[in-house]
Length: 566
Image (cartoon, rainbow, N blue to C red; front, side, top):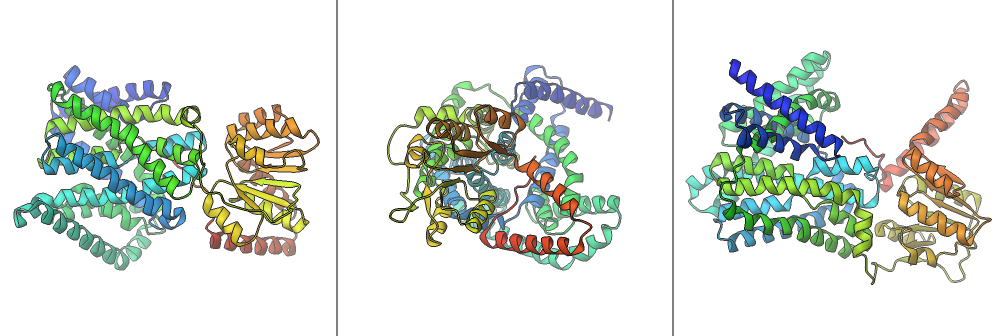
């Protein structure tokens, strides 16, 4: 017992030390934990009781997927459109096919090729969401497309994990790999349906009682998690799938946010142990056997995957910049790939060589993603080139005259447009989301499909004649270009731009922006005005009814307030 506590203590101490260094270097934590595992295991051999650590890492996987299940909202697929749902599915199929056939050409077994195809098909939800949140780009067009792609990938990854977890049992029954895959897939669908049916009948009343006490609620959630783990393990599924289904069923309850907030510290603790254990199990003795697969699959993830995603986005009508940024952000291996390969090693489906290739691939691609995301605009400027930027979408009646240009229609822009219509202003809307422009065209609202970060688009606009330009686009580089271009040709006009950070707002003011909108502060300013009329019940009722009507209209057209992401 003392040795176990010593091993866990050593793992946590080294993991924290390496995580601190990663934080200082602004690197993601997952590669840092794997490096900590390398230091503890293969390099210094500080921990030798791998079986205990492997058991703890299984709990890490369980808690990771338990929280993923609670936070997964399948309804979000409807909100991100065809490019994320259909396009995301096409991307997974193409990347899987590429990885599978390359693995076959490299003389891997069929089941190993299946694993390698899945490994390169998925991207990291944890890392990409964190990087986008740090840059304030979750609510940008490419940010919303990326979130949609990741959600679709996570759903497919869960089905893949479920299928591969039961494939050994199915192989014993059928003796045929492809038939075994089909049996395992159908078995996963059946278990999902049964879990959903049981949760609909039992959990609502059970958790309604448990929610009266926060400690009982937390323990009940853990009890359900372990109950699903035991039941699913008995019928041939891994504990990871049991934990995920438990999270998915609890996620539909009104208490999921409170449960999730309490479980996340456990997830972080055991998740760190899981990633450390991957590093501890990593062996690179046969360098000559893994170097070629590592290089080839690295090229698939870093070059072929972003190219495929960019082409898919372009086929759906998005501009070159949006497509490029979407593809570049997803050029890495997922934490689900690490979970898959860990399960595959335990099941005996794959050997240490594939395990080592995957872990090294994850380390390198997750680190490169940090720099890809940080310098995405600079990288785009290198590859930009010339040529057609996408669909030529616009609605500009003959002899159209406008003195107001609205850049960005979603959310804030929607409110601005309504105000302009009420004031009787002549305006033109510019947006780089083709679905928004198509909707505006149907409404016969003057509009132009374009990216304000593109000089060619700005030159199409009558900036020199505009009395007012309003940009609700939160991208700093785009707004800086717009302000500079506008002030060069129009000294008398007024320009409003949007920023997500105070230092960005100050920089835009320095560039002579007339007003900078800070959405997070704007809400507080509006509340202060409401406080002044809070004593007048009639005014407050009118304000409430007006707000309700606006929210219902926003719900109808698909607007959603951005949520904070870890």
